[in-house]
Length: 69
Image (cartoon, rainbow, N blue to C red; front, side, top):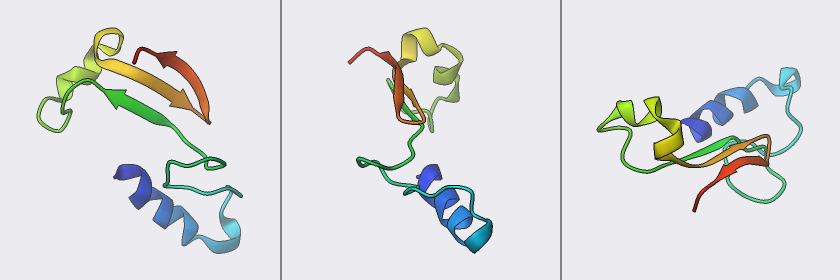
């Protein structure tokens, strides 16, 4: 949700936009930073304080750095 909203703001920059690919979507060819959290971080933000335990997937710039699915 945060990704899509921020992508809309970046796209509004027009020619000043620094990304040439798709933003704010999860699909092939799009720029993606993604965290899959075991639990609802909106109800318990402390889940993010223990990434070894609570993050199943970490992806930055389309590259997977952690995958425990």
